[in-house]
View 1 (cartoon, rainbow, N blue to C red):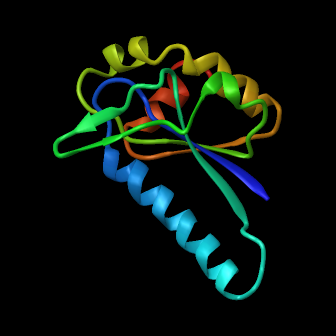
View 2: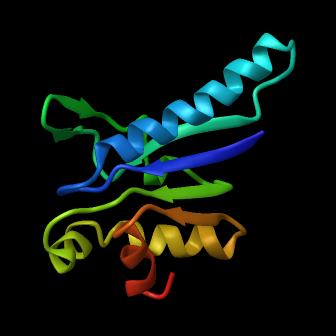
Length: 123
């Protein structure tokens, strides 16, 4: 089973990226289950702290913190909005974790401006 970590960054981010991605992988697992097969993915929302991220009408809470994830196969970084430098500063704790996971074999994917988070610090 592939482990997928969807990052919930601090600050302004695209919650539809997070929710939609989580839903897609969940649907695939649902199809597998309907066919009598095991799920393909373990999907977790990963944050720096237990508090949720609010955007408009809803809040998304992490399932786990980065310290709880020892090994993941795919890290998904959502789009972030506003001042990019501020977003990097608010989420700098993710950077060594992402680098360590990448060096251990994890793949990285990002949406839109989330790609800059990946490339700013040599991930």
